[in-house]
Image (tube, rainbow, N blue to C red):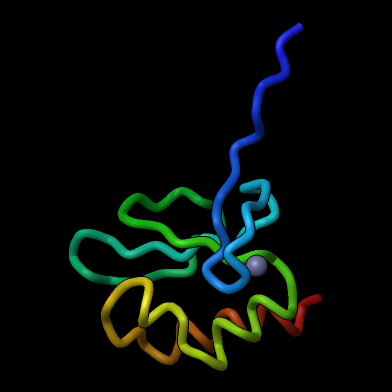
Amino acid sequence: MKNFPKETRTCIACKRRRDKNDCLRIAKLSNGDIFVDKECKLGGRGVYICIDNTCMKMVVSKHLLNKSFKVNVNKNIYDCINEKLEEN
Ligand SMILES: [Zn+2]
């Protein structure tokens, strides 16, 4: 029986590869809009963050999305990630 590799994504905070189900996707659409892609359904370019308080806090405090997308990401995206933190 073949052992299929899991789909993994690299977290932008800790740079570790994680199972994609353990990551939060942030998508930048072709029109430049950025969304927290909760269902992983949006297209565009995606970056991933571990669903982990340490990583999500690091992304918010260092504005790592700005670096990844090379734009100034709207504060409400970071607020959205912060809300995820409080859910945990
Ligand atoms: Zn991480």
